[in-house]
Length: 183
Image 1 (cartoon, rainbow, N blue to C red):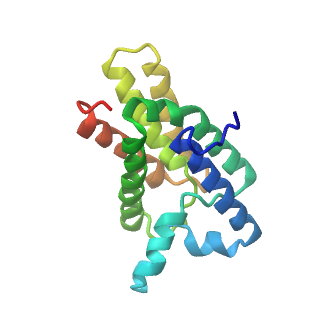
Image 2: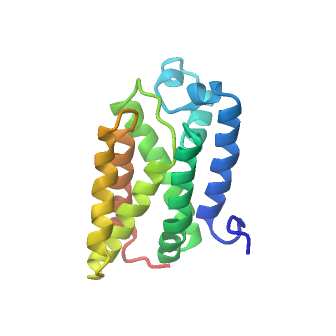
Image 3: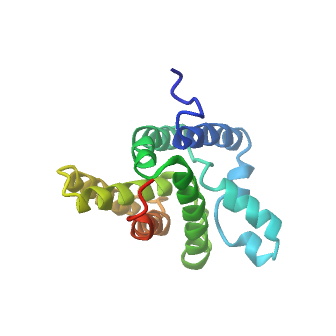
């Protein structure tokens, strides 16, 4: 089966969106500058453009490698997390994490243009870590190391600490809210 078939999982549908929107950004670099997450439209009181910015910022990517790495992560970890919480809950996980992190970026990193879905990948990692940790699964420590590395990667210029950190926090919050509501 084609790996990006949208009915397979919502995370695979997110990859398709990333490819389409990032490709548009590669062809028209002004999209990245215009709709990366920052406070520009909020300062103009342009809430329509702010809404578009919140919808697009994580699907835009800075390079093919950036797009490939995030897509691979979504392809490999997304279905696992989605299976743990159901497709509907996973969809809401994505939507609410986007809003949570957009607000965090507007508050704590207002002048930096943040793009990419790697932050949502951090939410997946943190959710998966806490879910495995509470069941004493042996993979929990390895997921924690991956989580720490991906939060620490902000030391590389151009990587958003606020985006990665707050998405990781949202994964933990989401797990805490819904831990007893399995599927």
